[in-house]
Image (cartoon, rainbow, N blue to C red; front, side):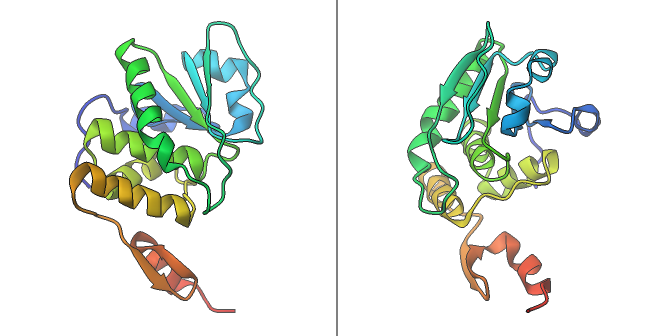
Length: 189
């Protein structure tokens, strides 16, 4: 993995953060819907903006925090691609104002992780592989659905005219090649 440049937290900082919220960069955090509605978590992490990437989680609105809704289901057929640039641009704008963004979906596994990786590709010039590796090192439970992976692969090509992750056939259907070893090690039922 390419060593991240710019405002990235150290692993020591990552270890001390609350388990319900994970710091990705100096201005970007991801969490689940429960943490996003916890006033203590938001204030202790100096969150100034919350991006809710779900249709099922209703945010509690707190004073002095801006809210953005990205109404997308966690389904391989959902079209998240249309939000890659606007969300990345929004996060960058908050960063430029020295704010902090909490990006969340229901479980912080798929939708928020995919948008986080799109931001890292666009504004930190990370390849998709590096963006995934970094995000997963910060929050090990991430696992965007295969539809979002396909959209991220297209986005990476749009940004860099090359791909570092590819969809491949497996006994579980099409999957990103980064999961090939994991699927190969699974015992068939």
